[in-house]
Image (cartoon, rainbow, N blue to C red):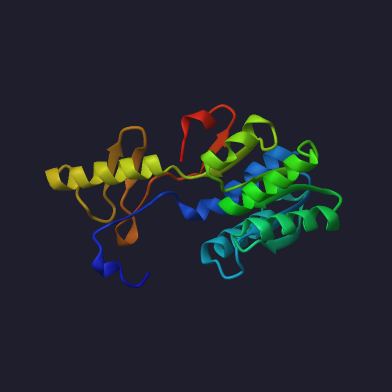
Length: 215
């Protein structure tokens, strides 16, 4: 940030303004849009995490669709498996009516899922968040986790290659406001400061597609 003049274009994996709302909607769908939930984050200083959490809180507070979902705690596992596990166990002890945990961090969501798996409480406490398919596959396969989200590095790489090729060949103009079609991705628009979002929404991984991804 602040050095945009030194770059020609910036390709983001996803529209990060949608991350918080996407996570809330996924959790809501898992718990029937009702009950106590908590957030297990990384560190208190993580800028991306804090931005997403603020968006989650705003969505929960302002969208009537989620009026029966109560955020009871936000805890921090510092992106360490041991501390994330301890914080997850503390959430379960402190909030016996907890029905869901959102962990928007790959370390946290795997740790939370491990605790739920060990306790055999997947039918009572739903874990979701931002995870890696390679780390979450077993939890999906055994039913510990129904669904989680992230973005697709495959799609981001495909857009980068397609865009670069188009600019070199002159079929794509690298100008703010320009749009172009990318196979498998649809219409991509060059936004302010030459930023492009690979996809508008997060990719959701579940039993139907988990084996299609290896990252």
